[in-house]
Amino acid sequence: MTHTCSICFEQFNASSRKPILCPFDSCSKSACRSCYQIYLFFFCINIMYAQQIMKHTRSKHAQRTRHRRKTRRSRKFAFDPNCWGKNKPLEQLWTDLSSFLSAVVIYKGSKPYEIVKLQQPREQLSAFDADPQVVAILSAHPGAKNAYETILYPKAKDKTVDYVIANHTKFFKPVPGHPIKKLRVPH
Image (cartoon, rainbow, N blue to C red; front, top):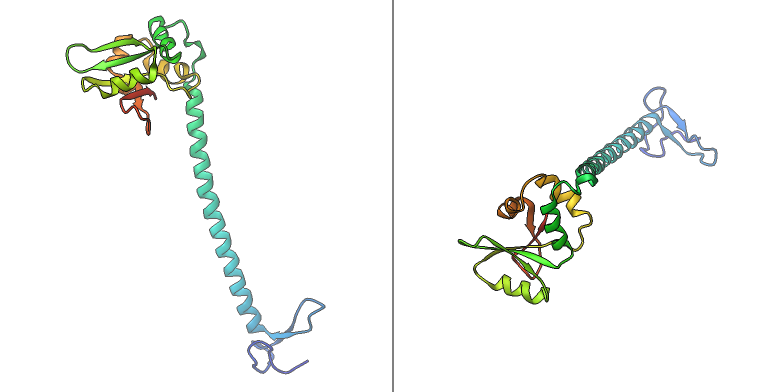
C-alpha cells in the first residue's frame, strides 16, 4: 500500500487523511478519507438534484393528467341520454341540422332567421357566406357524436327554438379553419 492518496496525492495521516481501500474486491486502489467524503458529498448532491428534478417533472405531469381527467369527467357528466322527448321542437331542429338536410341562416335587420332546406349544401352555404346580410349559418358538426345530448340540450333545456337561434352565440361557435367563415356548430 502506498503512503499517498491516489486522488489528491497528499500524505496519509490518522485523522482526515486516513487511508480507505476501495470496497470492490477487483479494485485495489486507496484514497484518503477527505477525498471519499468530497466524492460522496457531490455524488449525494447530484442524486438529490436528480431526484428533485424528477419529482418536479412528475408533479407537472400529474397536474396535466389531473386537469385532463377533470375535463373528461365534466364532459361525461353533461351527457343526458334521457333528454329525448323533453323538448320536441328543439329535437326536430337538431334532427334536420344533424342530417344535413337544412341549415339555419341568421340575417341582419328585420328578418331574424330562416331555416333553409339544403339540396346542394356546399354551393348554398358558400352563397350564404358571401351574402353581407347573413350574420351566421347554424349547422351540426359532422364529427360530433351525441352532440344533442352532450352539448345542445344541457345548455338549452326547455328553451324555445327562437331563443336558441336568437342567442346562437351561447350555443354555437365558429369552425376554425373552415372555408365557410359564417358557419357555426354547437359548442
